[in-house]
Length: 177
Image 1 (cartoon, rainbow, N blue to C red):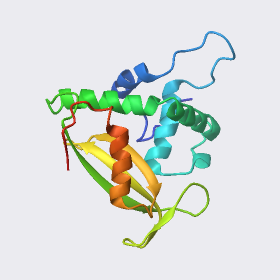
Image 2: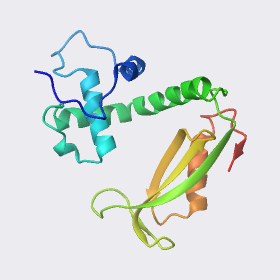
Image 3: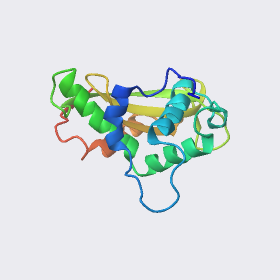
């Protein structure tokens, strides 16, 4: 019996691109019950729908499996590597630009969150209790780097921290708005 298809499922073309980023299969140990594509489908369902991990539909891999791989791939830098390679390819194929940007745009956004878990602060200017995201995108709007801070950090301080993380990542970067 085939499972229900969701709008967030990875298409065949997308899977052809994303499969190169997936870890190699291990020859020893217990075989995995779910393939990488199904695990990505579960992760993308949470990312797109905004639902909690524990309420992933039952026909996708269980939440603890999806969350485990999401976390491991985050810690190993797989998501950042995937984003970087896809950004480069998009710049070349769709925008006909150099793979590495020479200009970027930085901005921040204060976002409400709960007071349980993680750091948070109060942004007095926006009257928001939560976190502040400092984001850098290239001139095509493609994500380069994100840093999340407590909302009470000043934009200039958050920008300095973000720019310090960009130093060695983008050698062509000359201009930031």
